Image (tube, rainbow, N blue to C red):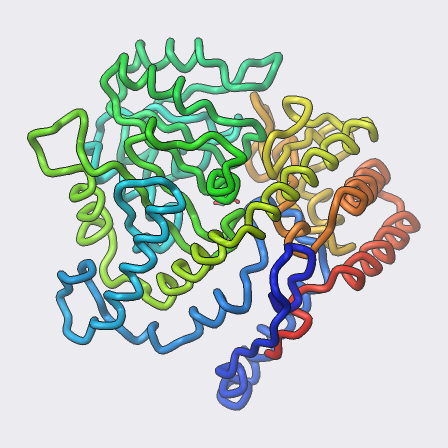
Length: 441
Ligand code: DSN
């Protein structure tokens, strides 16, 4: 992979020729894109939901496929001229089904939020009940936040984590499900660092006759690599994004069973999901992004993908271990996956910590912690992820070093001298582990 050393992939030259045209037509935007590329190259991305897509994935997106209208699905479009688009989308669908062991796949959601919206529309009526995971414990905005469409249109209730262990407590999930009697249960996270037991969720869903959906946006790559329990056959529907551990283009994806086990006499589950996406919530699909999704799914079939995901977990564990050694409080005392949340409230304001880390080239995002009493804009924690640094080729030794540098800055948030030292250490690391080095923009 051009400039993506360390993840076992072939090194290749690549270039986005369209950037040359952009330079002539709109130098202002061209220059800003170049600056953003340099920022990504010159810093260490520790935002758990970000990654570096391959030149092949990026190239597929920068194509005239963007010009095409293809409302509908392969073989059933509303516009002519979809001969090749149909083939591309069908290849992507087959790859997604194979990788996630799914009976049905829909590659059209523009994002993870759109994927979730389409599933809710397909399965739950307005005002009906959904049981989700509490946002401060690791859920997502689209899992029923009051400020999001999900919390406004549907009647949400939540389960959380055990106060002491900070782990999902299945007794509480069951109690909440029996009391609330939801139509849909979400086994879905965005900042939870432990494995999800889909079998247990399914037992509870069966007991209350609810659909079960997993939003595996964060852990999709780990699931494909067999390093996290598989959502199928337990879940009815699985949503994901394609740009996090999956390392593809920005976008969403829905996987599902074909049959609707709760309402077998109605349309199939697969039909409901497809019409939930189109015409339910979207018009024309972004076929250039769908082509890039197909490319990232091909990359995920390469044995080097599993090797990469193993290293993502190893790096995550090492970082959590170092944070604990440095005296920081890691939620649930560690991680089983690619991320962890740290309570930084005793060291300062999380927004300031996030911004100061960004100034030395260490990019993270602030995040709520379980039972957080602080507001979402200034929560008590920060979230750290290992996928992007692992794509750059950092291994255990460097992951530990990065965690140590971050801890030093967090503990000395007002020391300019320490920040200067850390900035120079980060510079050395990004030079040793370059990204997109042969990619000509
Ligand atoms: N998917 C979220 C994240 O984890 O960063 C953003 O919405």
